[in-house]
Every structure is written in C-alpha cells, then in structure tokens.
Length: 127
Image 1 (cartoon, rainbow, N blue to C red):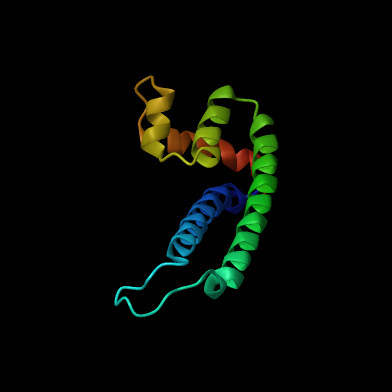
Image 2: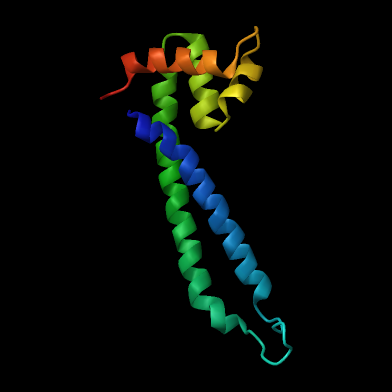
C-alpha cells in the first residue's frame, strides 16, 4: 500500500460522483426542446454518449471497489486501534482532518490527528 493508493480512493469516488451527475444531466436533456424552441434533442442524439459514460462509470466503480478492499485489508492490519480509526475515517470515509478529530474526540485537533497518522503510516507504507 502506498500513500498515493490511499488518496486515490477519495479521488475515484469524486470522479464517479461527477460522472453520475453528467449522466443524469444528459438523460434529462434527451427529448426536450432547446432554449430557442426550434430544435428537438432526441434520445438517439445522446444514446452513444450515454452508453460510453455508463461503461466508464461501471469501470470506475470496479476500480473503486478493488481499491477499497485493498485499503480495508491494509487498515485492518494496523495494530494500533486509534490509528486504524484515523486512517479509516480519513482515507475510506474521505473526511477532512478536522472532521476526523471531531469523530475521535478527546480534545484532538485536525493537526494532531494528521501528525499522528503520518507518523504511524511511515512505518506501514511501502516507499
């Protein structure tokens, strides 16, 4: 496991979210009159683009699930329960450091949980 892999899960989830929004927009436009009321946009106009985008989303979802499983295995192998929780909240749930600190409680700050996480991850991550 590398730091890039840990960060990649959040980025993949964001990308999937944006692609789903784009797909929804394309489906909403199909069969509607455009702004000037002259031309119709038919389903066939977007059918190929919709199919390509759907396939792209499916591929990204498979990649995301595979990476999620890898990260989960990595997190479960961390012996320190606090660090496991911090890593899980940050890299699986995609929370910001301040949000992680709020979940942990105990007067922790975003900076303190970030430093603790980074310090411990140096031991567990491949260079």
